[in-house]
Every structure is written in structure tokens, then in C-alpha cells.
Amino acid sequence: MSFAGRLEAELEQFRKDGVYKRLNYLEAPQAARTKMQGRGEVVILSSNNYLGLCNEPAVVAAGKHALDQFGAGTGSVRFICGTFTIHRELEQALARFVGCESSLTYVSCWNANEGLCPTLLGEQDIVISDQLNHASIIDSIRLAKTITKCQTAVYRHSDMADLRDKLRAAKDARLKLIFTDGVFSMEGDIARLPDIVALAREHDAVVAVDDSHATGVLGRSGRGSAEHYGMLGHVDIITSTLGKALGGAAGGFTAGPAVLVDYLTQRSRPQLFSNALPPTVAASALAAVGYLERHPALVTRLHEHARYFRERLIALGFNPLPGETPIVPVILGETAQAIRMSELLLDEGVFVTGFGYPVVPQGHARLRCQLSAAHTRDDLDFALSAFKMVGTKLGLI
Picture 1 (cartoon, rainbow, N blue to C red):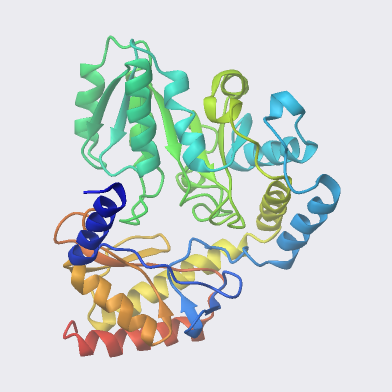
Picture 2 (spheres, helix red, strand yellow; picture 1 turned 120 degrees about the vertical axis):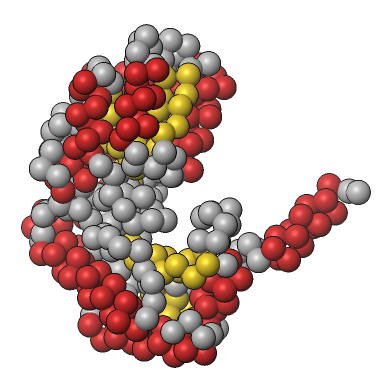
């Protein structure tokens, strides 16, 4: 079989298995409602635009100004061709915002995570990962294991007894790095950060938290999972994204002690061998951080919407996972059912994605609803009416 023929056969199997992904094309910005090609206006319940900053005029204007001031791109790697002052300003703002001494930006949080484990860990070290961590953390660990021959371990999701056992077994490791999501994107639950940090201190370990779904979302002013628990300044390493609540353009960062950031600048391969974040994106993200600092009520509104939507879904007879984040997974069971429901909801003008195996475990297929501060009560009620109609049609409620 030819190369192209083999790929086509595998793609056909994806279609048969119900996991083939079809792209929907938008003709307007990410917002509470947008225009979808061939569909017209739809309410979006599948975006990480938690605060509605993707098309906030002040955020957009900052990017336009940076385009005129700095140009379209960086041209090369920062240490080779120079680094723009806008990157320094953004990194200072991000470090302050998440309660760390310093930060370093990357073109994505995937790159930030990928740059962490292989840079810090060697044969004498171990990284201990939550079972439900994001794919970027998993791939970072796989890369480190392959390159540096570090040790690895996985603890059952949010199981502190199992984490303690893993730490005890690794007592002779030089560096014990615990790596966890702050908010787990498919479940919508929050890491048990106080317990994790306490165990880390007890066992002389270092804690790294990927706060991509928590930055701008958790805490009174959106500073993330550390603020949510009253622990700002007590987490060793924070990685996060600029591509979700903070304007949604692109980019990520690693924050922590100044010595860590200096070391990553010297040795982190995604930093050393890839162009820096475009200055337009850096400026938009900086404006988004400033906007959030001036408008913390956005976070309050976001959580009000999430509570309202979750409560109304339950009243309709659906089974969303319990939680306190704006990620509201509606459990449906089988993949085909989740995909079919997402298609019928889109027919009714509601864009929400269905997920099944292997993204989530067998029998736990779901619609992952994501709320935004930009939604109005009318948007939410419109979506709930569509859920009621489709759920009744499919015999789910």
C-alpha cells in the first residue's frame, strides 16, 4: 500500500470509529456569539475565551499599535537577533500577576511545558505526574525520559495517598518534581494544591503547576489556582497560556524564581531554537493582563454564569460533573451519542464540542461546555433551550 493510501485507510477508520474531526470555519471574532460559515450566528460554548478578551477593543488596539511599532515578527531567536522591550514588559507583568519572581514567554504553553522537564531533569531526578494531566505535560515528560533518562512516575488522579507513596519511593532522587494541572480541562476539577505543596515540602520536592485553565479564571482577581487557595507566592513553578483567558491569541510562559528563568533562558531548547512570541501577540497579552487587573469583576461574572448554567442543566435532567469552574462537562456515555448531540445542537445554533474515547475514558463521552464572562443571560437561556430540545429528541431527558 502506498504512503498516501495507508493514511487514507487510517483516516477512513477514524470516520468509522466516530473520532474524525471536522473543522468549523468562523467568519467573525471569538465572542459569546460569532458567525460560522454556512451556519450564520451561533452561541459559542466550546471556547477558552473565558473572559471575553479575544475581541476586547483595548486588547485588539494594543496588538495593532505593536504591529506599527515593532513589525510583524521577531526574525529569529531572542539571544541571536535581540529581544523586544515588549517581551520584557509582558514577562514582568505576568510574573507579578501570578505571584512569582520572574517569567519567560514561549510561543505556546505546550512549548513552555516541553521546555521545562527536559531542561531541569537528569538521570538522578524524577518527575511525578497526575494521571489526568494535559497532553503537553505528558509529552514533556516523555521527551525528558528519552533525552535525559530521568525517572518518571504517575499518581492516581488527585490521590494524595498515592502521591505520598510515589514520593517515598523516590526518596533518593536528586530532584523530585511534582507536575500537575491547576484545572483539569476535561473534568473541570481543581488540583488539590494545598495538599500537593504540603507533601512537596515534607519530601523536599518541587511543585510545577500548569495553570492554563486557571489563569484569568480562578481566584478573586483571576490570578489562578494559587490565589484560589490563598497560596500566591507558594508554588515553585507555574506554567500557563496567553491563548485562553488572556486574550486568546497565542503564547505561553513559565514563571518562578529568577534563577529558574535565567537557567531556562540559557538551556531551554524551545527558547533557544525557535522564534520568540510575535510582538503583536505580546502587546495584546500585556493589555489583557492590565485589563483584567482593572476589571476583576469579569471573574465574578464568569463564575455566576457557570453556576447558573450548571444548575439549569441539572434542572433539565442532564448530568454535568460537579465543580466550581466554568468548564461544565455533560456526561453522555458513548462517543457516538456525544458527537450526535453536538451536531444537533449546532443545527440549533449552539456550538459545543463532543468528546469521546481516547480523549476521555471509554463510556465517559461528554459535551464539554465552557462558559464566558462575555455571555449574556439571553445567550445562556438560548443554549439551555437548545439542550432541552435536543435532549428530548434523543431521549436523554
